[in-house]
Length: 208
Ligand SMILES: [Zn+2]
Image 1 (tube, protein in one colour):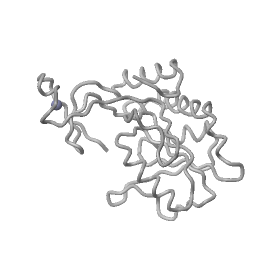
Image 2: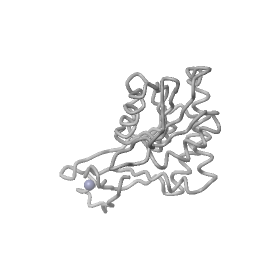
Image 3: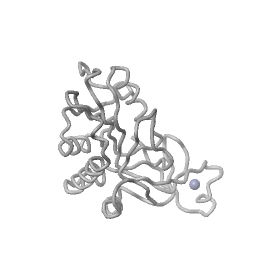
Image 4: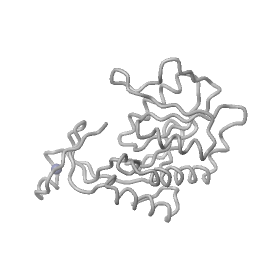
């Protein structure tokens, strides 16, 4: 199910947390935003509500990043900045910032329906950024953050998350994409959904 850079022990522990808290569910789900039907659903706040889980998941993610050697690309004298474009990304960013010794942590609240930086927050070509989020679904949220960061002159060194539902994606615009867990999810249009055909009960879910 997984081809991440985490060790099998780390992967097992992370999946155990997501499963036992209901942050990961299998079944038959309809997402409000897309209308498509899926066989898997993630709601990471269910795992992150528990301090111990938040620590384990974030520290494990950070260790995996450290092991990968990517941190060598963050240059001495520049600012190591973590940016998260999601709400659940905030605790992940702070835990990771502590473990990886980041200089700054920025998050992007929603203003008038769009994720952007707080007023007066400044990024520049002195910032080297790691983008962190809880789950990469279509990747649109991360792409939006990436564009906003790049427009300031800052560089992006790494894109990471707890879960990436896009198993085939390994980089974006030349930047390494390195999640803790990767999972393939089946997606069906309501008209051609085998789970509907089987009569499996449909659960409607919301995406933030
Ligand atoms: Zn269906």
